[in-house]
Image 1 (cartoon, helix red, strand yellow):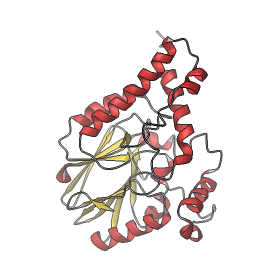
Image 2 (cartoon, one colour):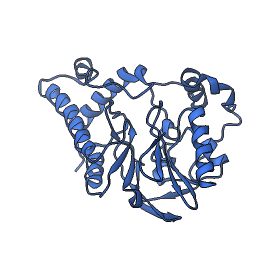
Image 3 (cartoon, one colour):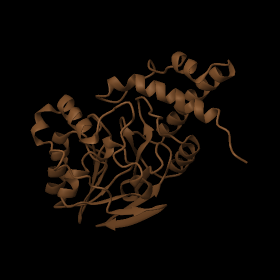
Image 4 (cartoon, helix red, strand yellow):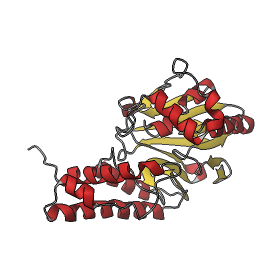
Length: 289
């Protein structure tokens, strides 16, 4: 894990999201979970050693790479928090992966963390640990001398949540930000996402912990906006030329711009295809009057 500040640690070098820990004098708070059992166990042990106990886990969204470890965190005693819409998409897997949740998770561990396969619970034992506490717009709690401001910042997904910890000058934004890797637009609402990025721009922070990729400063907000506009512009030009949605899919790709995040190279075609489709639908949508 990388130590960002005196009490914040994050892991950016494994498959899946960037899981993080904030240590307080009254216990640890996790933001999202590792998708590797080995790293997950190491992070739990680290938090318990440093903070004594794990008090909370905040899920920034419902996609499986963020909530895979809810099973383990719940058993470790964490109270789980999520925006209320997280229950609508809980354990949602992109349609490109036609497997049940447990089978999908086993496949990931077999390929990415094979030494831990024997520690993957059976389907019967695997606890679908949904949030214990949900909120609508904002939820603020204090633990020790730290403040955790959970804010509904929809965009990448309807339930997307940002966790702002002012004492550490840090905000955890989930998949509203992808740094130095492909952006996944399969569940995006562009209007919501740009609004949420504008909100993030107003925070006084040094560290933005993304859903994927390295931790950056606020310059990454502008970079992500540029990447989103590049996608929309490319598809928009195709529409102006008279291309159908499938013709845009065939002709537009940003695969050469940057890699997919660690351990997800097999997803490149899925990302390109669905990004084009999402942009096309957004640009050609009609609004009922």
